[in-house]
Length: 449
Image (cartoon, rainbow, N blue to C red; front, side):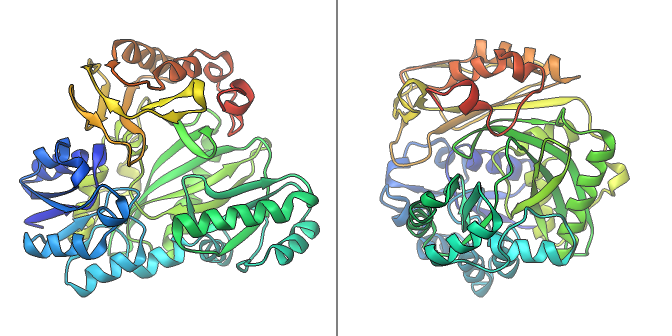
């Protein structure tokens, strides 16, 4: 087992990883930017080292600085969390060359599954259903338009290296295609330094269902059930839950089997998520595989009782999975609300500032993952998510009630947040009845969405 792990991230996920390491008896190293000198993760780790200015490019995305910090502190491994370098194959390759374990899949696997075009090819070869679309990358708008014209509108234009809604555009009509394609491509170049695009048929009013998988170095793969991530704004998730009320037991088994088959076909290793779109008639289609831990992993932990971060570390250290599929028993219902420092009344504009008063909810079945504290100043340089409230109860209705109670107990003064917006979702009749899709927010909250 590793003696010391460097965490190449910040915020609540860095704190989450530190806690798991502490429980496993592993020492931790935090890296921080100049803007994060007072950050909680830098205070909780056994060691902390500054890696550059506030800009992510000069700090949390600075591969050389992070590797230098790892070598200087004699850490055995790097945990990338999510975002930043978590799906950067070049960084994973550099870790390997420096004889540092990257806690995640190999660089080759990231390139195969992290690139959406390559992932589609792999899934098609494995006979996993995919959304109809291009098999080869598309680089030119006119070339893409010809493909879209043949496919029929509406279509979805996507960046091969995309994530978090970046580099994605829905195109309803032929005359809008070239403008949408160029906009999405420029966004992809800015965010991922990659102009590779692909086009797929747009599925109207789908649910976004993803299956959590774990895979060890010995070919063992298990799935830990699904998460329904349909409550989204501009392709960014707002609220997630497990299990999905849209799946019958037969459909759940079929999708879970497809997720395991997909991971095995790819030769995948470590934690990953196989993501599907579920249409209104019950057909499901592979859309992508996330080769990292995800923001919403706590809902899976709550229903499965399995610590995902510890499993990641164990797999990276060469241990086999200690559970078979039949050993995994999912119980109850979990919901996660992402709490962001943003103003829903001003198109969700980020609202950094000082937290003047803070009280976090507690009680049976309530969990809060956060790195903020009273007096903490939220910097303007990073993602606006400041906390995740997760609840677990016997069924969906009980979990919704528990989440409303937890949010009612959450006091966060000094900055504007989306807490009231989350309340509105939870109190919405269609949400309570499980009538949701990825269009839920734009349909029910057109001004804010």
